[in-house]
Image 1 (cartoon, rainbow, N blue to C red):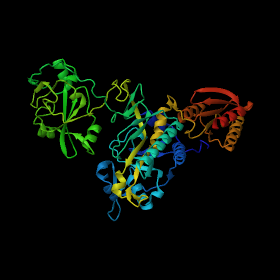
Image 2 (tube, rainbow, N blue to C red):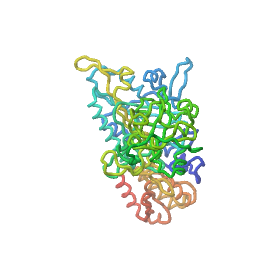
Image 3 (spheres, helix red, strand yellow):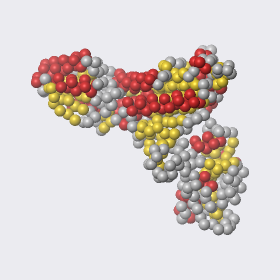
Image 4 (cartoon, rainbow, N blue to C red):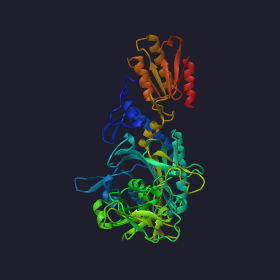
Length: 569
């Protein structure tokens, strides 16, 4: 490709709204352009990288036994109501009506559609197992699109779905896809971790793992053990129970004592006023969800993990109660709510249950209670892991290592769905005895466009992107220093034609621009090898630049061609 014809304009400065490095560089290097918030056009360079990612994904999906299909983006809303996810997705679901007032949604995912497809195509166990996948544009009405391709309203995704006769088959498919994902991310040059995760709106009946590209800009936090390799999304990370209560030698504990705390409503204020550590405080938070109001109790130095709470009560969503709801439920404003005498279901975190005594709100404005004893002063009927783990805590699995918190970008997710969709949508098969049984499903997604952004985030320096060879839009970038110099122009053309004949994807910068502009653009675009055709062209020599290693040397053109072709192998 001749750069003079390439639709790719570089930008000297990144737009103000581009905060992350991948977003800035993809815009500056001419890979993407924003059309609207969370909606992007992929220019030729960006599309070439996407195709490289897609090809790797296809190769590994095909090798894992999956078959490619292409399903509609427009989906009848009735299917989503049948699966009972129409309300679960809520405002993130993009909805529209046709001219006959029939309601449709733009698919954020395809569990409903693929289940409807398979229920119409397969009725016997003899046709199972089967796994299908597609690479397609998805739509989600994100409330705050941000970070470029990492949080968009329109994005490219690979989603695969397996159908089995039993759980053993699903387990085998799950492992097969898990390993395929590992190969995909390794081939794409990503540093990643596979972590235990929450199924979210996809749902399911078994384990689920997220694949996280490690990055300081990641929206997800993962907890990793220093000893055994245990890793989990912070939303799902378990907490080692039986550890660390604010234990006090209480002896024969007296009744809880009410004391005056005018205007003191936060943990920090209690800590400063009473000169106590926050782990001696019992924090009582009022939540609403699943059609009811309830309280969650955690220590003052801990935070409620709403995912764990949501899963415990079986609600699709929960939220902190507003001031009016708190007043109605507890009879007092936030800051003075306590568990003693509170006529709500109490979800008590295990660390609170392990406390000998603590300080809590008195249920009365400007008053707290000291000497509150779990189990004596409030019920321990619902005790569980309801909090988020913290940096340095003991690993819940091995009990030896400590948990370290890292940031990650979610690039893939694998689920064991079980019969969540097959039962609701009627995807059944007849077994060898002629009995009807629901198919056992798995679901496996990869964010193709997110991967493009994640790779750019991990592979860049202060001058631009440094693409891994497997994903670079071109393998070689030829820089013709002077289009007016006949020797240079002839050498560049001959080199370009030779590499093209050898099947090397080559970009020739034949623009009538200053050398400095060409070098800056080349570094910004990030092609792995640059061949500079300049003052040594008459001696059949070029400057060979390795973008990743940031090295350069003058070598014969024949040697440059040999290196490039050897690198291709």
